[in-house]
Length: 128
Image (cartoon, rainbow, N blue to C red; front, side, top):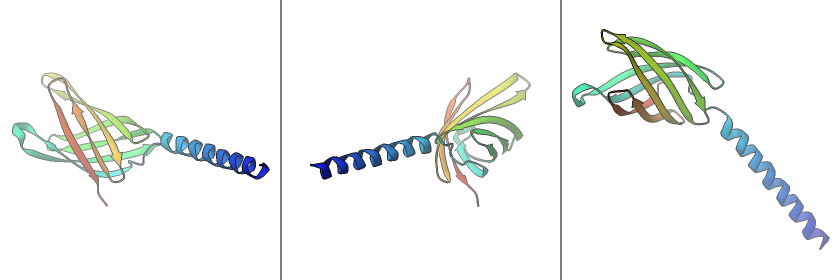
């Protein structure tokens, strides 16, 4: 009986440690620093490729999106495996805001671009 109680206490302790470790790991921001090749659908349904360069400090990200329209700086956050950043471009019609969000899976991202005019899906692969 004493052996069973010790075994159960040991198993419970191991389980709790494992769950605590998983909770801490889930809170850690994914590593998104580097250069990414972004693919999305452009105007008129044409495929469009852009370059996303990200610097990361913990959960905070900054960087540049390079596209045919030129470079645009951004700031954003990484929480667990979720990334979000906003790009603002000045146009003749005022400020155009693009909100990017995605899920990170290693060297790949998949997400949504939201503007006041449209929503589009996008993917990205980290370049080596």
